[in-house]
Structure formats: structure tokens, C-alpha cells
Image (cartoon, rainbow, N blue to C red; front, side, top):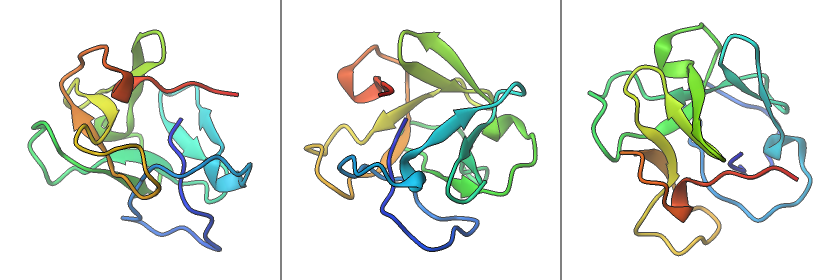
Length: 120
């Protein structure tokens, strides 16, 4: 699952981005029985930004868990996760180089490496 910089608190709307693995609790994610993915450090859910229309490039952030379809995720292929509201896949920004701070967004599922999320 994607990482985030270590922060002391989490707030609705905090952006989800890539960060080098550092074993911080902010980089631990739990897949729940209801299809939500919760961040261990903050207890907030991985959330497809609801105000957008489900287009490629829509942002992913943290938000208080509410069970909405924009917080539902399902596995569509090995290591790929599609959002329940739009069917788009969780993706590292395709134009990035994998550096700390590169954005995580929604893109059409393509089986690309930028959509593979592995666990350790």
C-alpha cells in the first residue's frame, strides 16, 4: 500500500503520496472486511476525492471512514486496487519518477507497474 510522510496527526483531506519505506505506522494500511483501507497511524480511510467525477488523475486522500463507495476498494489483479465509486485504480502518478512526495491518484486500470502495490 502507499506510504505517507510520518506526521503526528491525520486530518480529513491529507494527501496520499509516495515515500521511502521507513516502518512508520503511517505506512501501515489495513484492508477491512467492508472494503475500506485504513491507515494505522491515523485510523482514516483511503478515499477517492468525492468532489471529482471519476476521471483519470482524480486525487486520493485520507478521510474519516464513512463506508461510502469512494472509500471502497477491491482487488482487480494481483496487487492492483480499484475504487468502488469509479472503478479506477490506485496509481502512483505516471509522470513521476517514484521520488518522495510523488502523488497517488486514480487512473484507468492498466496493469502498469505504477498500479502495483505490494506488502512486506
